[in-house]
Image 1 (tube, rainbow, N blue to C red):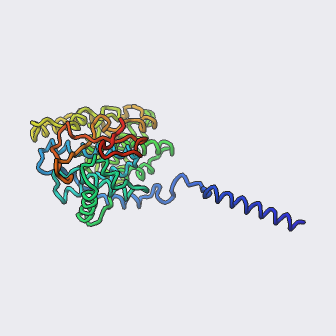
Image 2 (image 1 turned 45 degrees about the vertical axis):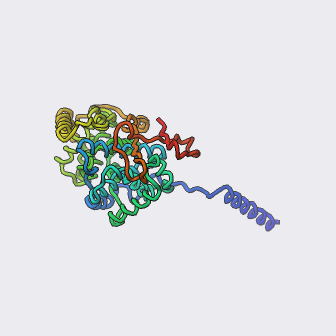
Image 3 (image 1 turned 135 degrees about the vertical axis):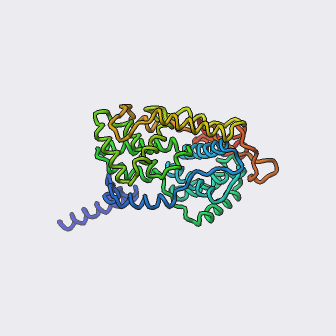
Length: 386
């Protein structure tokens, strides 16, 4: 009788295991933190070494006036930003794409006829490297409103890989934010909030060319310091000061350069907020035809003057007290919400590589909303939801 009960019991356990196998794999709870990568200075050292290797200054279209070339670069990155929002893509893809574009344009001069093609090809490469399910070539062609062909996109992808010698790795400020925040002496909830806030701050100003003038470590530290200013209450001012000094020592940053990078970041936002400043939005718009080098110099001087007027020393305990909740960080619209998306229409009788001049009336892309993505039409293109 006892043997029969054991047989029945084993049969029941076997049946339960078989039932669980049919329902799906049994999930195993994951650890809240990675014991190796969390607060590991070796990770920081590796990032600092690779950051110098892969860093690139902002690059622009050739044969364009400076002000117009700056606007074209911002418009391209804002279009790619909206593509990421439409696909619900991770932010790392856009940051890596921007770095690939600048690295390629530093090697291969490109005019406006192939500018969007380069951006689309770099996004395709980044998607394959960063996403589990990368974007398809056909969908990327649709995002360009069919201004490029499948053959053009694949050929440009190979050209970029060869030009970069298949060294497609990149280090962006996002790579520094998470491991740096782990060293801050604060609670786990506050570190998570700072990590999300700093990442969101960087993504808001990703398209601004001045950000690339600093190494990723300086940009990441500036974003973390600004997130501290917006999230830490005034009674925790001493903790914020200690955090700033710790980040500076951890990343081996020069105080004067960190101060300069933080000062420049402040000029890109309205004081005490994560809303883009008027001077950034003004440059994002299409410059007038008469705007040239002189006007660009005026804009730069205006940025410097505003930086001197609004600078707040991140090392001092003078915290403004402006609060930034986690919900406001996630719900704030991107900097490209007020901008129309990029459209490089093909000239008549061309294969998609030759495009008409970039003017406000034709620099647009229509994207389908996510719920209508199943019925794509080559005639209407894609319409981006507002």
